[in-house]
Amino acid sequence: MNLLRHLVIALAVLAACVTTAFGSATIHLKDGRVLEGEIVRETDTFLFIRVMIGGVGKDELVLRSNIDRIEAAEAPATAPGDEMDELDRDAESEDAAASRDGAVRVAFITLEEMVGPFMFAPALSDSVEALEDDDVDVVILRFNSGGGALAEIEPLIEVIEDEIKPEYRVAAWIESAISAAAMTASICEEIYFMSEGNLGAATGFRQGGSGAESIAGRELEEVLRLMEGVSERGQKNPLVMRAMQVPTELSVDFTSDGRVVWRNDLEGEHIVATENDILTFDSQTAVKYQYARGVANSKDELMRQMGYSDWVEVGFDADEIQQRHREEVARGQTEIQKAFQLLQLSLASGDVVKAQRYLGQLKAWATRNEAFVKYNGLTDENLRQAEREIDRVRREQRRDRR
Image (tube, rainbow, N blue to C red):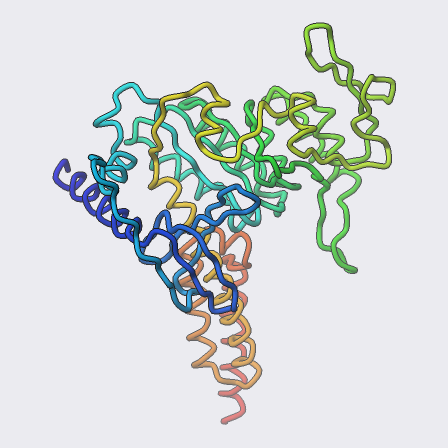
């Protein structure tokens, strides 16, 4: 096991060294877009390029399948007398515990895209399991999601509450957390924003006959009660999340020692929301009203906000699990939709051999990832219904041949 571990570390360091050799690069995507920046990490299936937006570096995930070509600039020569070359620096970041005893060990896990299929509780649980051998002290959940399925909120919260909080100091780092993502992030006692971050607008919707409709009645009351409990466990006033779900009068006073006192009326010193609003925090209001503890645009800034001057990033495997899950879901959704359509066309034309083949593809996807069962209709009942439909067509064909 020790030999295997050292081999894995050596391969990771070698890959990092190759990446660093590119320095700045220009990536031409198949859709015509062009990204310029520094390639900071890469694997066989994806890479991260750090692009500058308004003077702030942002790491963009790019799938290799979407790349037309990469134009790499020549790496700058190492300055004379620089005793630590690029390989040494990457080796330190990958296995810093060997040379920086006492440094706080921090794992960053990205939770991105749609809550439900992409931000999926079983995948997060797998990431937590991957942390066990990394001697982690702090877990940062980085949110960047416009919302998604209400059904996934409670499972995600249970993973954070039952599997992460008991073992690690945990904080939410908000790039964007809207609707279901805002509800999920609120279970964290510690919340930090990026400067352009936003959190809120947590109104629930369901698909109705005329399109998306706001949930109401008993369904709404159940979600409101759920989020009251989540707010309390996240040490937040439940009125805040309520104002993010339904129009609520909300104001605050500040005590003499600077604490926020929330009021369910408009009589406070500062008006936060009215009966005509659905509350959304930006970074300034979140910090002003003490919903967030600070603003940070980089990992170093975030660690300083959290009180750490000496830290090292670990838990890379845990975050890669999330990246692989999102890649698989994106590819699977396309292939599943295609297989469903071809199955229907095959049944319509009476080609039961092809229909059986496409049903087999759907069954294979159902075994690959639980998200496809829950969010893409690959339930046992739906698959059995397709089998029954194939049998019906087959019986009709036999009857017609008699």
